[in-house]
Length: 280
Image 1 (cartoon, rainbow, N blue to C red):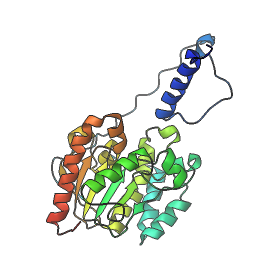
Image 2 (tube, rainbow, N blue to C red; image 1 turned 45 degrees about the horizontal axis):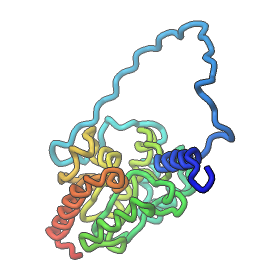
Image 3 (cartoon, rainbow, N blue to C red; image 1 turned 120 degrees about the vertical axis):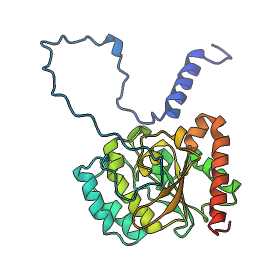
Image 4 (cartoon, rainbow, N blue to C red; image 1 turned 180 degrees about the horizontal axis):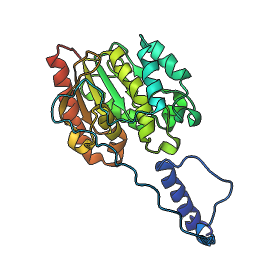
């Protein structure tokens, strides 16, 4: 169209932008494939039915302060067992980082650019635990540096804090491909390192950001909508730490109406810190 905008090109750009916003930032082929033109191959015979597998044991809901003993509902694979053994040998945060750097038990490491360990002050009283690194975090090697990280910085500033007065990490230390949701095996493999991270950090207060972090650390099947805004006790490794769950900043970018809940949750966090004698 002379002197105007080509509607076909504009539509293509809009579609590409939508795909990038949804996390599809990697190509898988040189040319597109027309799936509708694919001819179905007839199946010679139906496969024999598989033996029925036992249903997994549901994780308990946290109706009272959290127990210090690990839940038997978590997968007990070789990778998770190896992670527990390695994490237990780490006596400092630098040692834990070095152990993760050389750990080969998580498949995410093979597709990620680099390890994303933590950011902020190791001696800060407040520890925030998100879900997994995204594209920006994978590139820079630091958690929460993209759009959701900028929003998190504003939330911290609202209660008089910044990254020099907080310590930030994630449930997973490597980016899942295409920002997909991590598998149960991946989170179970990283969990021993996260728990050792908490034991070495010894924060005064813990905030989990998002559904995955809340469910894994609180050892529950409850979703973030029901968990957020409630205080629990993290009781493991001889520690007893107040812990609260709230929405992930990335979720707030998709649903800004939930910002008011996060605001309330972080006001509660500041009140909890003050009750423990922590100054801003």
